[in-house]
Image (cartoon, rainbow, N blue to C red; front, side):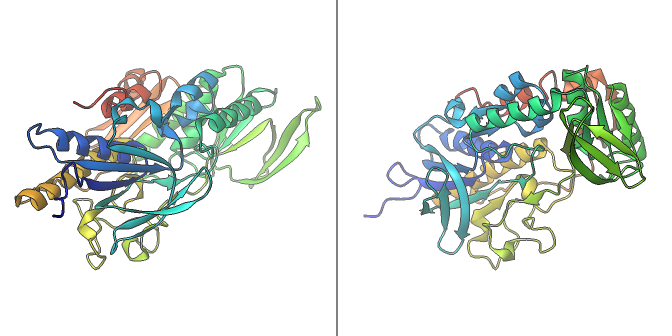
Length: 405
């Protein structure tokens, strides 16, 4: 006699690609809901695959690349994420090479030996986000390598007397420049941006962009607007130290001890999805408002979900949205499981179109913008980020240090 799916003998196999805000939120809420009926729990086996060996607080990167002590805090190995230390959860250090929606199988490449293997699933969740360049995010794939990478970068930008130049006035560049100046106030930090306003690529009103500039200057960062970098040449400075001669399109030149590029284009990490699931121009995943694959010609499209930064949806990419989408997806998968097991009609949660919203940390202050307007100041910093660029807020919201009932 064949075992019924969802029982201890044959648990549902749930595959989560990506172990950050969205992926962990999905796994936690799904397991919690499956456990909720102690008399008849739905049994699941959750596999979480990530290229890193731990949860990395991406929001904290500007501070992690400025402060060695915080760098240690920002990366927590998955074995220390207590809420998911249970026999029905497996973490795999590796990457997803491809998925076969028809067969419901995923090909995994394990980081340790680059061995490839195939794993079956009943539900697939893509939550791998974007590939971003160093030093916007770490390139290391283990906590040990990350600490070496972070310490080397911090030493490089804090060791010499010449200014540190941060190139790119988007959110990442602003936060990196301001955090470095806050942590190392004796260093001269310059932020160069090619346009006349910061945050020029974001659909935000000029008042928010002007406020971001004011706060950046108040943090002690020198801002060079309308400065497009054309050349950065390694040299020896007057003291015989390694440095860079930097030239801009307008002819302005300066010497910098380090040049931090914060303008690299982010690329969705969606190569493993079938091409017909993606928006051709961007590589983002097309989804329905219930976060399932939008192209119903793909086999088992309703059993495949995509969440977080990699989806083709409105709004500025934010960790709050990612965690919310993860929660809704966990609840939706549970609804589908109940339909299959009990014949109940699923009540799927949906997401709405997202208006432009942002929370930007700038040194010891911050600016926020949303449907209710703009706010700025130290009180906004405390509300949105506290003293650790949101680490505690996200950690506690996801309950990563706790345990499921």
